[in-house]
Image (cartoon, rainbow, N blue to C red; front, top):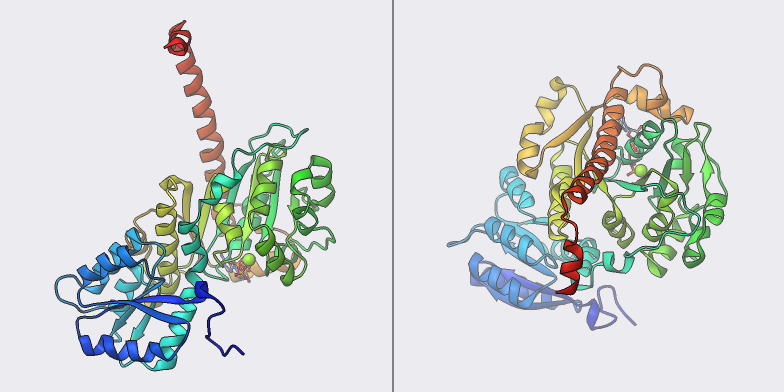
Length: 442
Ligand SMILES: Nc1ncnc2c1ncn2[C@@H]1O[C@H](COP(=O)(O)OP(=O)(O)OP(=O)(O)O)[C@@H](O)[C@H]1O
Ligand SMILES: [Mg+2]
C-alpha cells in the first residue's frame, strides 16, 4: 500500500537541489528529506554561483536556497535561475523573518519562503505545495509549446470573416475582480454592429452565469467532444444570448467536468474559440486563477491578455511571476495590459498597500489602469445581474475606468489592425513591378 508521499512511479519523484554555504545546514535538510520516499536530493552546493551552474546542469524540480551567501547571494542566484531554468521552482530560506528580505526574494522569483529553524512538516508541505503549483508551468517548458498544436487554425466554414480578437482576462490571485472586469469589458465593447462573445473559461468555479443572472443548460462541455465537427450552427445552439444582447458561452455546470476537459483535451477551449473566431469581432475570456494547461493555451491564442491585480504584496509577487512566464514564452510586452482593481482611496492605501509607482517598478511595466474600489456599485450590479457599465451615469467610478479599459482595448486591437492594413497597402504601392517574379526565379 502506498503511504502519503510515496511515489507511484519515477516521474512522481521530486528532485531537489540544496544551496547553502554552511555544510551542516545542507546535511540536516538532506537527512530530513531522506525520510520521505518522494524526494530525491540530486545536488548540494555552497555558493550562489554554484547554485546557478548546478540548476542549469541538473534541472531539479525544486531548489532550496539560502539567502545569505558569500560571492552571490540567494536573491541574485534566484533571479538568474528564474530566467534560465524556468522548470525549477526556488524556495528561499533565511534566519530572518524580515519583510524586506521576503519581498525581495519573492520579487526575484522565489515561489515560497522558509524561516530557519525549519520544522520537518513545514519543509515537506512547502516542497509538495510549490511542486504542485509549478508543475504545469514546468511541463510547458519541457514539451513542445502548445501553440504549435493550435496553429494553423482553420476556421469553420460559413464564418463571417470577422477578426475574432481574443482578449483573455486573468489574475494569479482569486477574488480580485477578473469576472467583473471580463464581463464589463465584453459589455462595453458591444456597439452597433460589433459582435462580442463572453466566454466563462474559469472551468471549475466559473460564475459569469451568477454575475449576469443566466441559467443555461448548454455549456462548452457540449462542444469539447465535437471540436473537429464544430460548425456555426452547433456553436450558436450552445451560446446563450443575454438580455443586453451579449453572447455568452457558459463554462461547465459542475466542477468535476473541468477535470474532464483538463485531462482529455486541455487546448479544447482555445481551439474552439480560434475556429469560431470569424463570427465575432471580440471574444472576451474570463479565467480562473490556477495556471492550468487550458489557461496557458488561451494565453497563446490571445491577442491581448488583461492581467488584473490588487496592490498587495502577495498579488504583486504572483503578477511578477506571471510576467516572467510571459517573457519566457516570448510574448511581446504589449500583448499584456496591467490593470489594478479594487484600489482603495489614498488615505487607506498609504497605510496598508503598495503604491502604484512602486508596483510598476517591480513589475518593470506600466500600470495601464487603476479601477477604484466601490463595493456598492459592484454589489448592486451583481445582485441585478447587469454589468456595471450598463448603468447610465458613465462619469462615475468605477464605470468610467471600465469603459476606458474597453476603449483602450478597442483602439489597440482595431487601431493596430487598421495600421497594419494601411502599411501593407503602402508597401504594395512601393513594390516595384516584376520584383516578385525575379525573386521567384532566383
Ligand atoms: N472595483 C471593485 N470595487 C469593489 N468591489 C469589487 C470591484 N471589482 C470587483 N469587486 C467585487 O469583488 C468580488 C470578486 O469579484 P469577481 O468575482 O469579479 O473576482 P474574480 O477575480 O473573478 O474572483 P474568483 O477568483 O472568485 O473568480 C465580487 O464581490 C465583486 O463584486
Ligand atoms: Mg471569477
